[in-house]
Length: 150
Image (cartoon, rainbow, N blue to C red; front, side, top):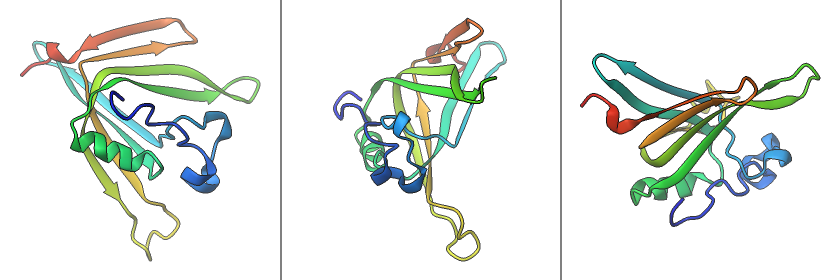
């Protein structure tokens, strides 16, 4: 981030996410779900990229970034899958450049009916550029938000 530094530092540690800690990914934000769509009528129409994540040490910093309309130079989302050897390997990347947070939904599950669930956040990003890369297959593409239909 431009003013807060690496917002994901220490996000997958025991102090940050408890028993879901992933020491090999300690400076990454754990993402449970990612949604993004682009559509086309005459020109490309970009929509927000939305992630669902646990409440962690980045949560207050992300709220501050939204409050201050802070621009993030780059946001990198890395997807993993199980390899033939049975280990997680990165295989796909989505990069947003000059991204801003457009909304945060803080969701605390029902304490009685959903007691097995933990608090989560949905973070929506807008951006200037987006790129996609299938790192194992060697394909990539990019698109600009400014090219969208107004």
